[in-house]
Image (cartoon, rainbow, N blue to C red; front, side):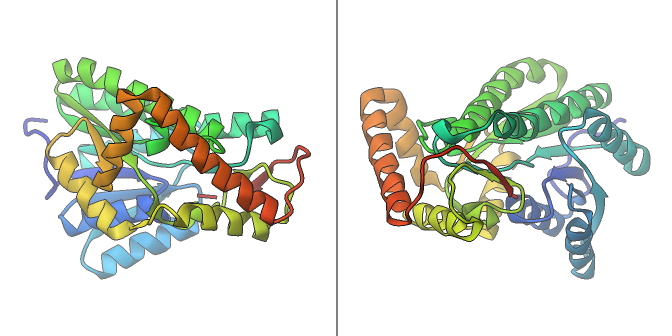
Length: 299
């Protein structure tokens, strides 16, 4: 491989969790900019439908089934992509599942599920793609975390834990990788209008209400934060990835919350407490009980 990273025209990108939400919009934005995109998702039918639509619009896209918690599958996807397309310029480690509810209501299975997908999936993507990028001498790893990985986020304890870990991994790896010709960025979205706001398909709820009521509460809570349109979000993210930004926060006004968290942890905790009180009030208004219970639901 003699040429370097392509931004974005003529490049090759893998996007995990690409069947819907942020992953799908990033895939669309990449295709518009001339990138050949591999849409990887555990929901193959939805990923294939998304890829077909991109091809109809003149983009280059294909779909692959992928369980990001399985390293062998992730490793094979990276290898297959390089065999078929000759290179890998980007991997967007985006796949994840949401969680809502107090930690007091978690089960051990719900903890493990969040860790295996949200953190394990990123680790697997890094492990597979980083080695390949070192061999070819270029590449850009983009890990999707969350503002919940930068600030105190009650009612999202397990989700926040995994996203803090993704931020830490990305910051450390960026320093190491620059000596090997590889770029690393971490994306920390604020509240974006995607199916995640209402739990998605594989998310975890820890309230004891009916599933439709749990989705309603989650949606009401996140609406307070003025969700950004996901297509606008994707375009802004790719602009900053192209500039090789280390930590990408979109919408930009969330940088204020990050600054408060660092400058005054006590004020950050106070703001988090107020958000938690708002969340608890929504639960109380809906008649939520307090016994343990976790239900699988998606992103």
